[in-house]
Length: 531
Image 1 (cartoon, one colour):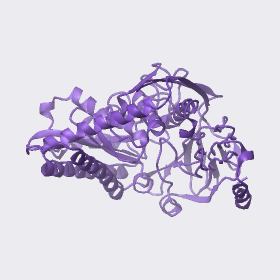
Image 2: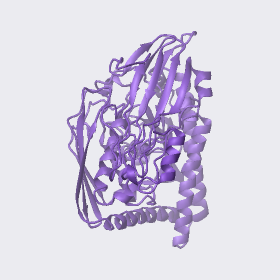
Image 3: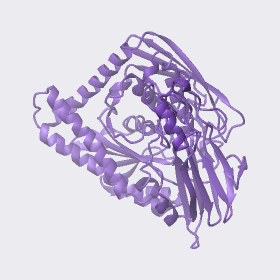
Image 4: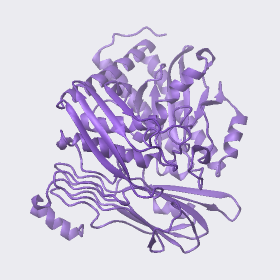
């Protein structure tokens, strides 16, 4: 290995910036090389670098939820494969929520070891949501798709064709899957190359030492941020609903600040026979995100930020489920966990917290058969309102918190699928009133042009996104078919040509009393028809 240079703050900062640029470049390569609309248009993917012990060095600013697919993957490989048998150009693939650290089956993870002069120095890893496994049951995970523990897809650069064939045989749109896997391969290869170049420039020992120092720095910043919050115990509860549930469930969070340490306890009812359950890695990713946004958003996205955080949740509950609970729609419940933690922090540092955002991930998953008998699957997740801040209005029609994907452009949607988009607009009156108003939800109306089936998923259909400091709540979301609400069987329905599906996403809560809204802002609300 190249002899290390003197480690100093400037060198650490430069190497940290190189980590960040590498994972962002990996993400761009994945998006540009991908085939399916869910990745090339909606950017439903994430990238990261890990060290040799399975600690995250850096995650790209893509989708917070995907951290849950990463933090258990490399540790699983290290625990189940002989380190001496891991070779350059090996590529591990997996997705399972109970064996390998995944969070739900559509998120396929690929990881490749990084070698420099024959020594393992780290890992390049990415995940991408493969829009497949559609029209499945969600009573338990065995109904939700093919479960893959981390296995070698490539061995020393040689494709294991039997593994790939088995995977593709279980996919509804195999030509998309193989093309997206190749894009994921390209992204990791780029990460490997960039890390090798970095080690060649600064010396491997220096790069590894800088990685360790960056994690220590993230820990120090997180501890300093926690210490600035008054010691105490702060609790918050909220309700959770879904099209897959009858009625509502109550979730709660207790956040205890003790010096530089933070203890978060999450309580929820037992896991359910629906795809709403959350495995521990998904819960951890959610808690880390929610805490970081309040304590110090500038903390580096690496493993160090989690060291002062202690997360507990009853095993077998919906928010820390046990095998074989179904997990496909775990993102919906995770959004409510963010609301819980932000609500608890609002008791002590309300100026750092927004009012509740839409608290949902409105999903429409269409699937059907083309004239040539090939299958098609189209997945879309739709944004909503972002909560008002203590000094600004909330954003309208955006993805919030654990998701960060784009909408599919109308041109791409109608070109690739037998669906016409009739309306796409902000929903007037959906943002909560206040001194600063909550963001508005979205309305998206589809018309089926051929027989197909759709499954919808969402939350805040009964409860409303709460306001803060006297601000009003945001509006509910809803699903309707041909103008009639509640016409879905556990969220699924068959569509005939001409059927119209309407999805309205929730707005967000306002901040402060509406009577304190600036007159010019209130006048603008009237001109724009916001209320």
